[in-house]
Length: 348
Image 1 (tube, rainbow, N blue to C red):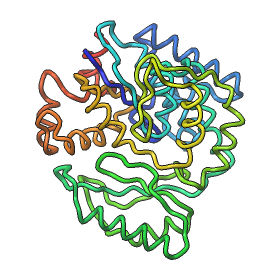
Image 2: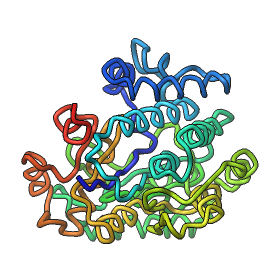
Image 3: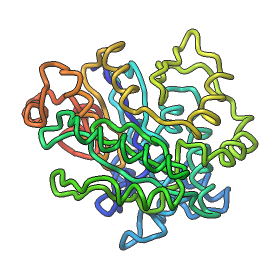
Image 4: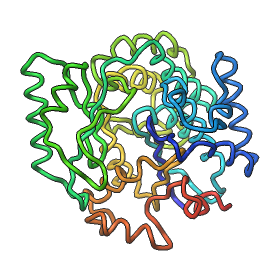
């Protein structure tokens, strides 16, 4: 199988994922070895081991805090990647937001330990306080086709907020959704200006709890801190093509490690993350047999599907088309959080 790997970011470890890492480790020695490494790195940094967080009786605020959420997500991603069967050829790697840090490890641009240390460390920067926040809003209808009125409403709301002298911007272009970010006053205005919508069972707009204004100019100080803390990491040309949040590909034979470092610690922190573009490039330039979503969770499934639908990939033009394909023997998106799909890439 020629697989495109898409690594998840913040919000992918929730209530249903509690205990999933320890369960995976108990059933696969390769995953257990990765969990041991993650626990060791956390312990060395004076943080609660990932396995202890995962083994809690219930999900709490401690799991959602940036310094712990990042560690749980990175560990889950690398544990899943370690279980790939030998016949799975990773032909390209991308990630969403924080998932770019784990994509570095998945592609080989950083070693696993250094990639985990980066993801975990960047998450820990929120320990001192959240900077601004993020609001999410859909740009598609119930069939997951683009909704021009919704896009116009977002543009109008952003224009109004900026005209009022408040700081707000696109944070993530996330398939059929947009994530907007800004200072607290700007978020309040966006929540008031964006027309209420319901997509599936979810009411929009809503603010993502505990999230800073990632991928905006409000994170300049975080970028500077990242350069100081992680500027010496041994970045290298990746083994598999690595697609960033601009849709730019770092290729194995030509990527400059300095360029990867500069993007990771600079542009990626303070400018819009175009996840949609990264998936589009993966499809158009590498034509994978399937897109594989390592865990924890399957939070990116909808966003990836919405890009596929926008592209008309392999005849997909609606949510119904996508769900029908997913129920076949060869799903186009493989979520490793689902046992029946995990077996397609792990062989177990």
